[in-house]
Image (cartoon, rainbow, N blue to C red; front, top):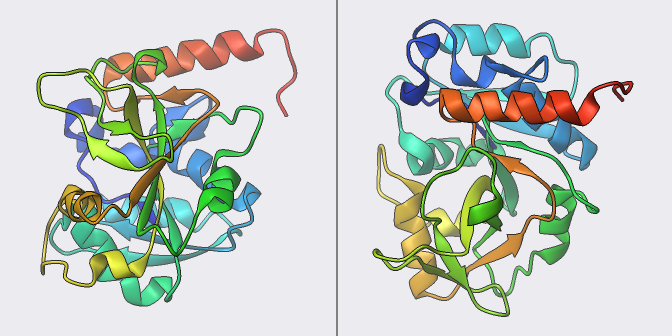
Length: 236
């Protein structure tokens, strides 16, 4: 599941006419970076939800031959949880990757998506989130999102503290997480809290770079990093 329906309000006025997933970093649209990573990890079928400037997202995706893409259009914005719940009939009965269309990351020694798949334990988990160090993320100025036990079991960051880990927007979810989900628009955070209470939400730490590209400053930092990383070398 690729989440591509958001408004991208923090990147206005650019996102008034260009959907955030189509903003380019390193000469390629964010949504294509995400789809490339999914394809490299062996994903063959992707569901993409659309809302804001949906016609532009759809037109862009027609230029790809793989992975196979099905759209889940939203007449009204359903937020992260509602968007996935609305698309469940297209996603099958087993666990599935969910990736924010604007997530931008570089793999470390191991492919992040394959590591998530290898870490997944269906008996213990309803959700497995890819985490990154709060203080080492590029373009990120927040307080983080979670604390994790030695076994990866997650709990929320206390309100007044800075937590070690932020959520990258990359995860594996199981359809059973949505069993008693509300109708209409709602945030995935609502289901995370239920899974935390049931001790079924886990995290795995990313061993590569992750970039917060939700602001102009974050985008600039990502572009600068990529330019310096590949300066004087041939892209692959």
